[in-house]
Image (cartoon, rainbow, N blue to C red; front, side, top):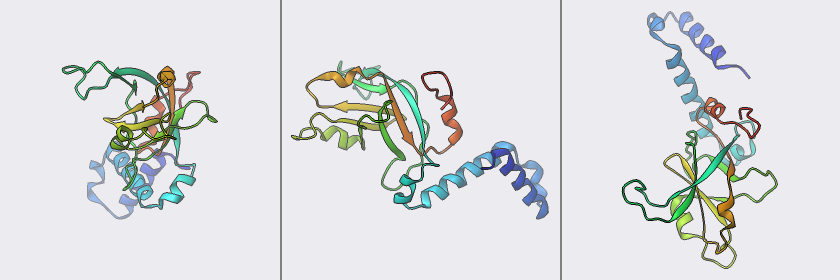
Length: 185
């Protein structure tokens, strides 16, 4: 697969071949933006069944989890009930028509059961049934992943780290995250 620099070089060559006079005004950042935007648009146009089976598009990051106040305004109006949230902001994922681009969310153990990743409204209203009352729900809000569960036993609050697999808008943003041993994702 070609690097971003190679794509920039090719774009500049195409502009020179077409005798564009404004080629000098194109910065590397502008070309990077165009390339990344075009990649996101091509991925959005693909069929969802194909995307979730194409592992070359997926990237997994690990994030630490912390307990925070459940209020929408925790600094000014705390409700003194806690919910689990990632400590760092999640990279921007490609938003498709019916889902947010996050494929799975769960413990860092690859074999363990994944969380039910859903929208905020579904996470709030789920978990009251006979078979799903022990499920852990994850949802994306304000660029953070939140974990919620209606389980009576709060063992799920002992989670300290999660793995999030998604299709990110800028694949380079994942380099800011590191595995347990310190190597970048």
